[in-house]
Image (cartoon, rainbow, N blue to C red; front, side, top):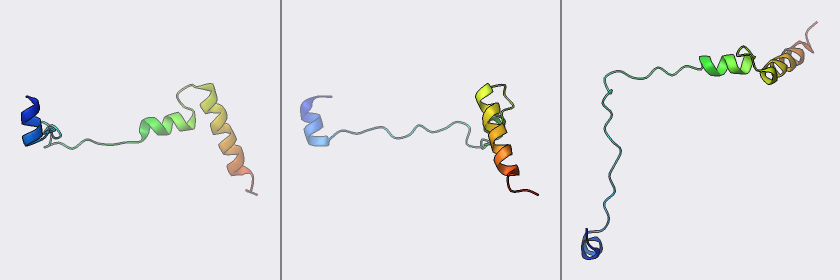
Amino acid sequence: MGIEDVIVGGLVFKGKKESSNEDKPKVKTKAKKATYIRGLHGSGAAKMKAEIRTKRANRHKK
């Protein structure tokens, strides 16, 4: 592609590639995120965060 071609025709950017698995849609779940937030994955910080959440939730219960 020469400079003259670019000046006359302009730049053409390729679009998004066609996906080959259009027939089966992806299943989006929040399972991994939920286990991470609840502290079930073993992280100390997530466990502390989950503990703080439960304490805050139980604050106004009688």
